Image 1: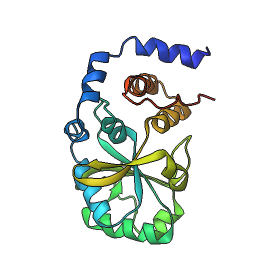
Image 2: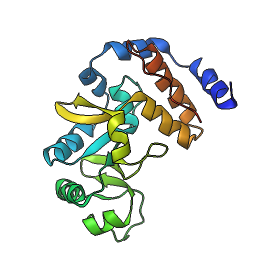
Image 3: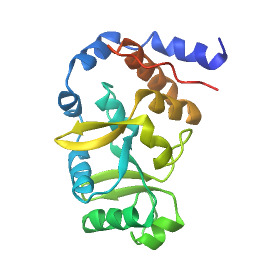
Image 4: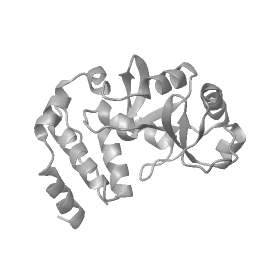
Length: 201
């Protein structure tokens, strides 16, 4: 067992498995009730036929996590047609770079999106992180077979699976990620239909 595994095992000792088991008993709709803001973002993008995959905290909550998140994290397809649909769907909701200094020039259009990759945005619906690539997992096309169609707030969305969420946390491996990895691994292992463990290489 390597040092990363050992650290994660230590964090697992502090996870309340009764909360894990309760989360697994709930429907996806019941799990999603702890979040604010996510329903409108997802509905607007789905109605605009934007191709995206839900990742990050919202995806973890859909799988049964009890961890609260402020931002909706999405991996979006970066072809021209989808970027145009993304711009059209969000432009009316005042997207702006989160944390940018006052007066910073940013226009939410195809030119700026194609010139960048990942965008941490504030909108009048809440926070949304648009990711052209997910650390440790790749771009939309790479994630597509690692996601499942899931009904979130009455909207059909693709949601990254647990192994993919674990893999990206391991790739980032910030101090705060150890606790999240421990919880995600417990969710996977205690699920009625557990998937094979993610590689930590």
